[in-house]
Length: 141
Image 1: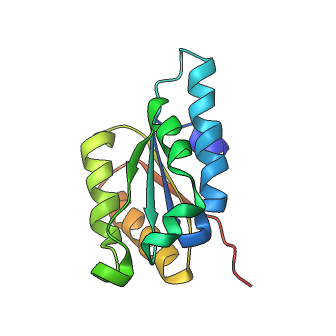
Image 2: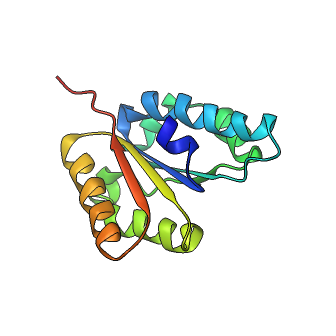
């Protein structure tokens, strides 16, 4: 949380049930901003699900409430319909569009392969001179 609270753009990437980790992080970041007008941080959620039914894990009302607080939500088509999401493009596009030359923090919670893709994408952005930090929240055995 310290890393995400210290950036201008916070991107939280969740893979499937990783939303259980992502949701309280996002909630906390948005309510920080709600209670302090000094905080200008932009918060984004990228949620990758395998099937549409998985979207029910987080009620639409909660997502709507978070969007009202300023959350930008990106939910690609489920992987069962469209194949694996293009994580590098999703993350890079958010950093390019919203991060500019600002400080960016990325937290990812999902399957190991997705975690690696996010970490590698962020490393590539750093090699390009971008101010990007990444944190992996591991939840597998």
